[in-house]
Figure 1 (cartoon, helix red, strand yellow):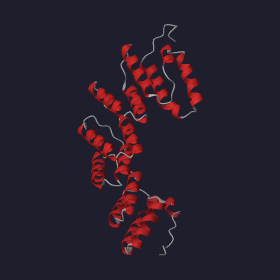
Figure 2 (cartoon, helix red, strand yellow):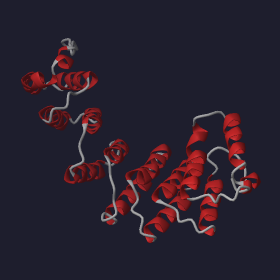
Figure 3 (tube, helix red, strand yellow):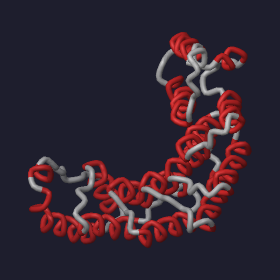
Figure 4 (cartoon, helix red, strand yellow):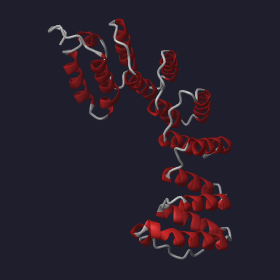
Length: 263
């Protein structure tokens, strides 16, 4: 490509960075190296770089090379590098790059933020996720959220950060994005694990009223818990509400055959 006098543009670099960040996780190391060797025909500079999957430094080097050649990175460029840095555990570098994005006027996407939260979840770093979430809220004018963002956070905070969980839940409701079936399922199951039966039942009912058909395991978990807690009357009210809404569920609800629970 270079020998023919064709100068790589931003799209070319984005494809290359995306391949370095993502495709390595889908194929064996040998196949990934063969793909990189093909890319070497395009960029001679890559021959001096290692070919290790998800090599963060390689991505950073390509980003610098783009800038040196006068090619301005796009939001897709930054997001690909952010994914690579987070998956490699280089969170400080990822945050520095995030600051750079914002400085140059780019608004981070939900995908950009989610790669941070996925890494915090993998590390079980609830405090790190909490601090980063608060930073997101401070930068609310630039914030792009999706349900995946909220569901990652709800799953993390359910264990021992109930105060923050309700903060996230309220923010999600205020945003108008959710909750969806996954969010309700996470919440109801989490409340059942904590034996907060009345709250679990309230959100179960809310889920039904909004037209979400709970999974069968959610029915059974709540049912067993209420029976064990001597709250059979509460379950009957919930079941009655379900039957009232069953028309909207159609054939899916008919497949739910709940057997009477025996202690």
